[in-house]
Image (cartoon, rainbow, N blue to C red; front, side, top):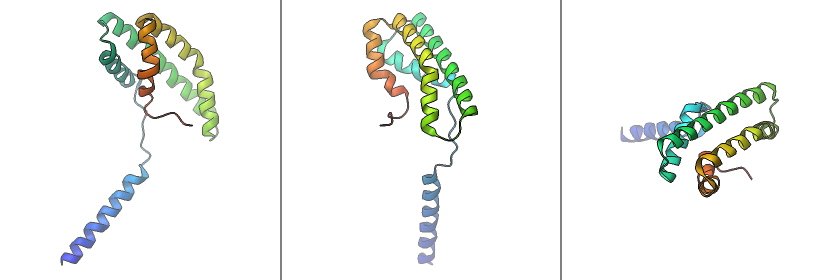
Length: 132
């Protein structure tokens, strides 16, 4: 009886582990508002900006993330299956939005805080390390 229970437990554990290992493919991109909340929390803990500047920062990132989602939809609609080509197209189309965001952030944060933001904080917002 004990051997049967132990065998059943091992089988259930193996089945559960293999299910988690496959990932399920259910990844869903957070909404722009959810991503702005992450930015807000990082900026608040790093710089303790006043409320007006935080609102400006939130608005700048909300515009950026909405533009990013729009570009992603356009690129994915016309894309084949080549991930590198999709990534390159996304980067190319997002370059003007990234430059506009950087200009807004520099005005909001100032030069010294902007440098800290770009070097230390912004890379942590990407969610995963850049591919080599």
